[in-house]
Image (tube, rainbow, N blue to C red; front, side, top):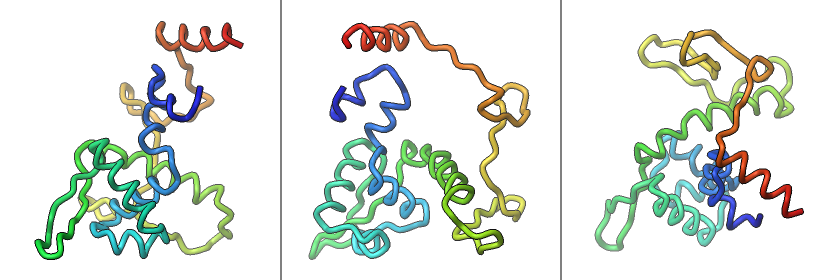
Length: 162
């Protein structure tokens, strides 16, 4: 399966990666969640070339992750804001932040690059996996996975094609 076909699978992970599975796209999402809205600031904070940045923003807009809003008529200038679909990517960024803090090579006691404060209670928060049914914390070793019929069939077909 080629990269261009990744989004055509039954797997939700592959479908998500077809939209956000590029390091530059994830950096743009980071900037959007940090409140960046304008092309020049995206470019400044990510170091992306204008062509690459334009391509990624157009893709995010086509995938309805961001909306583009004109803020200046002459010359035409736009701001980019996360849509509800884009806002739903927040757990992905929290997961990457959490993993990066643990495995990114930081020294013990080094100042955190990002502190996320829950506005309602005013305290710093972090990623916590909690079962949606019983509200207990969990980790991957405590989970089991059952494949849906169509995904199991798709995987079996790939084995048969080898």
